[in-house]
Image 1 (tube, rainbow, N blue to C red):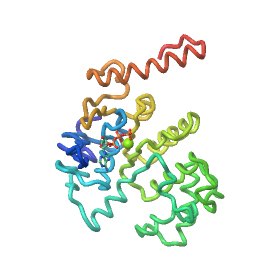
Image 2: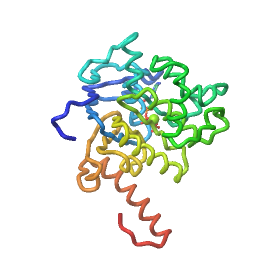
Image 3: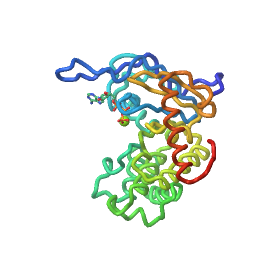
Length: 273
Ligand SMILES: Nc1ncnc2c1ncn2[C@@H]1O[C@H](COP(=O)(O)OP(=O)(O)OP(=O)(O)O)[C@@H](O)[C@H]1O
Ligand SMILES: [Mg+2]
């Protein structure tokens, strides 16, 4: 990123300890320092248990940090409460792996997408109907989806509905936590294309969390590598292969390359990526 621009989100010396009954505590985040710049997509990669979700959950105040500070547009948001916190929830949206966990089975998709528009008083009820249809169209869902219920949509369609709801409030930041991991490869690719398109159209800043380095690399400008609660390296996506220094990053890279090699051998190609 440009180095002249102020970060939209900045984390300094963030720590998060969970009590682990019988084993003392688990240090899920360890002195995390990280900046997200306006319009940027920052990838967060690391193996299971490295603290990726904890990081996202602390930023969105679903978890309380143990120590350290978080700044949104230069303002300390670490201890935010009440109405300022409600406004932060609007600016920082989160998309999880399992969309089914956030749907109410008795709420139609149209109502699901409309709710935050009305809750945040962004428009009148009469205008919201048209806005919902526009949002559905932007994420590639037909207008008829508004009258459907979550169980009538596929996993990929549900995730599109979640994204429609998230972008409806015009957030500054969207955190994607393994948002495409449960989808099969072609649908995952469609979701990644949608993410790229939305970034281009809205300029929204993103954090894209995944255990899959290849997927993270596809959509991110920079990639932060996590290991055991620490950020071990932050690299520009384009230079990942050549610039990785940390042994953990290099082992992640090696596993991606060996998967590609096996795939190419199966396809009978000699393509080198
Ligand atoms: N609510 C909790 N209580 C206790 N320990 C927790 C809690 N949530 C997470 N942890 C622990 O914190 C560490 C980081 O977990 P986290 O869910 O952030 O990892 P992750 O990188 O998102 O993993 P995954 O790729 O499997 O989603 C792990 O050791 C986990 O067991
Ligand atoms: Mg996780």
